[in-house]
Image 1 (cartoon, helix red, strand yellow):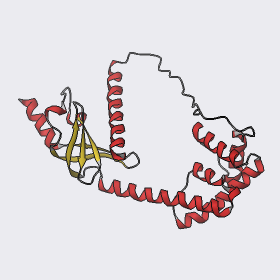
Image 2 (tube, helix red, strand yellow):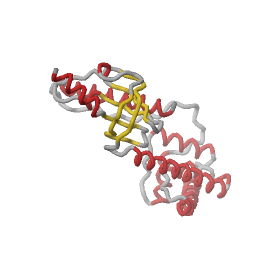
Image 3 (cartoon, one colour):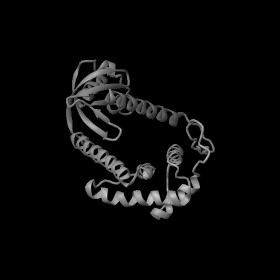
Length: 245
């Protein structure tokens, strides 16, 4: 289900790209100015009265790490809430918690050689009240999970290198896109635009049907998005032959 959902989202990205391409064709000349999006924090429940200030967190982080903190609005709210719930709202207490987590993370790195994000480090620091062991365990759990994900991503990228060939079965077919189930269990996107050139338009429903087996070539694969884009030389040959006729 996760693979199918990721592929469905990737199809939406493909549709969005097609829309952008069409808009670029018909776009009239303008001033080119665009309003800058301002991040809006997500809606949540009532905030605690003794709410940790964002400025205090940023200064404490800079003091502990000697670099600036960069979080999204949603991440800031998540971290500030966690610190406040842990009753870490004073500048000194926040800095001590961050420094303790940072020191522990160095030991964790020797066991799991992956880099934790600022968000992961700060969330672990909020458990300072539970003791050093709790903070260390949280950091180890985060590092172990990240290491496992990186290993899976490397396997994914090795399996689906650009140009590699795979056998798949068409699951769903529309005019512009087809979802192909690959032998290894992942699903891929076969886009009509990879079969088109010049003004030639391709309707995939005319060249492939659900249940058909097809040999495909990987065009692009993104492990983090679980996204695989493929093309098919066999279908391309059919399209070219039909176009000549």
